[in-house]
Image (cartoon, rainbow over all chains, first blue to last red):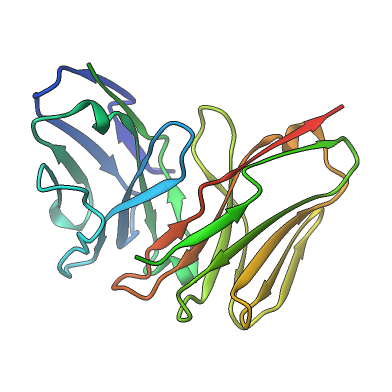
Length: 115
Length: 113
């Protein structure tokens, strides 16, 4: 597609439920990143995928968070047993190789509300 | 982890004036410094970037300067317009695997007519 696509755009879930957020990067982009943006805050790095390499999970806040990237393209971020503090906008970004060379393109995000 | 500090958190200027936003970083291996603009309810958009082998870069009303020795970089917007009102984020690449970007907390810029 022309841009980074994320779905759903909005998700309201009950505390304790699991949620899956999807990111479809720009075709041909080998690098994919997940960030979290809480209200009025900056962008918090969560996880990074580059090609077939093992992902950099250093930003995941707890073991309730996990992510997969299948076939080097679509990625799914899963949050298990959601808590109210998980409420945020989850942004996905992709780039050709490393962002230091080509920069990021962000998706529109998924706004997650845990009630 | 590596930090990017951004100041000020809010900035209000009159139309036509200049706006300056400053950031500092801690990872000496950082080599790429982009700036993103985020309008309310929208995705962050790259507006300008600079690499460590360059000290200054300009694109029309926007310029970025980098001082690698002092580990700080700045965004300058001249002749501000109301449509420049947005949240601006600076970022620095960090040398953990993947060179992901570490973002500042953002500056909310308001340009009043």
